Image 1 (cartoon, rainbow, N blue to C red):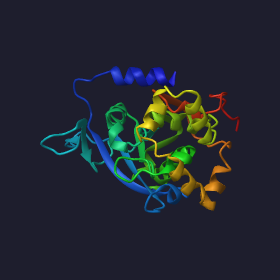
Image 2: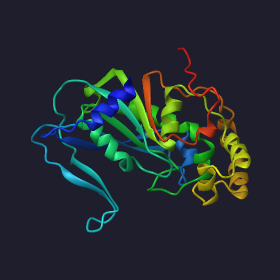
Image 3: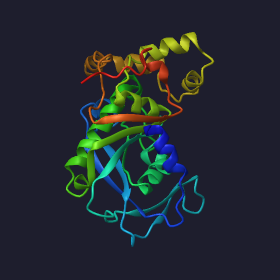
Image 4: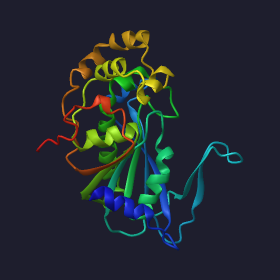
Length: 271
């Protein structure tokens, strides 16, 4: 039902669409320091939301303004919220190696439909920072980034009053689809499961990405990373639930790598 509603909203084009605002925050997440190349404990948060009718949108592009690589859409930066009412929340996870704005095409559309969309730049695996092996070995902690981003938004004096905490969903593209499934309750195994999967299925698309260097997991990288007692301790929690109690449903697009997930993929824990 949730996924069908999203598809209807995305296909519904109004002649005079309401403006969308974009604002940014920074939050802390305890495992960010293990995943970030510079050992920072923070992650960046991008928020899209319905803005006041007089808000002036500007084009949002990726790359040089004169030769954009990708036209994301248009937003009104730091515009006031449309009204004082509360809105449903959508937690949005980008794909592997991507930052929040690279899924802005989806986030902005959902904000125009009335959602407050909260997206993150996952530490050690985004388009702005150096990618790390630790970010891949601790992939399940991407769901924890969504948890921290939601908490930051809820506690923010400007954003918090506009959030309807009773209506929370998660969405994601590619690796973000995996993240949304984990946030909704799917069990995640350790990254070793994906290594085994790629050994048995070398022609799989995810394994091709790994071979091209998209997934930085050479034997040398892994040995160096696994030598860290902190990462070893965190990996010990691989099979535990990382479900967010607030998340009621997930909408995923080309989710991957599903080889990291339990065969009982959509087993949601009863809380």
